[in-house]
Image 1 (cartoon, helix red, strand yellow):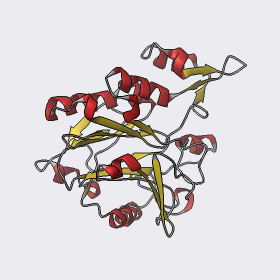
Image 2 (image 1 turned 90 degrees about the vertical axis):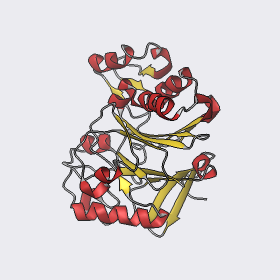
Image 3 (image 1 turned 135 degrees about the vertical axis):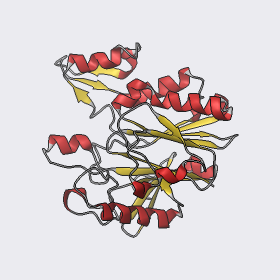
Length: 279
């Protein structure tokens, strides 16, 4: 049994390469992975399986890392735009997929991808943010969504479901949601009242996701609780919401963490990849 194996997660090791898969997606014949830090060619603070193209890492390293994971799971062309903490989701199909091939570094700001076509792998990067996979099991439509705290507040994940319903006639009763490793309540803290208000102004059930420490200054925000509440409020069955019980900040030996980078005053950070493709 590997370190992160659980009811929800399969932790795969192949030599130095490590990644996670959601068991429920495997059962539905959906290729999926969330990478760990290990098994790539990036060096120094970015070692070793980095997928961030906007930092100081050499592009050739990132592309080699992509080749490594693509070969491991037999992904075809992998697609991505430029992440910018937006609420924008993009439908990918045979008409536009070539524009978003990863190596093209398309500058369009997109934080979520939706497709129902086989052979279109989509990739989002995270380093504390929430990787969210939304899958319509009946119509076989899949969304791959990047949601940091801004994306959570802007409800990009709800936008994705809305597009799936309007474009593909998806029914919430057929949808499963998988939320990968991210910063959790234990480490997502602040003392800024203005920051707290960003959440309390958007999500009125703060007694469920907001917790104060004894000093009554420091507070913790539970993004997973917010996401679960928002999905259930839209009709997603609780048993269809699958969460990887892993905090990226607590497990920096295996996962990249933006917060850890800032707290340790390093100049650059790396990211993991979440990749999905319908078989």
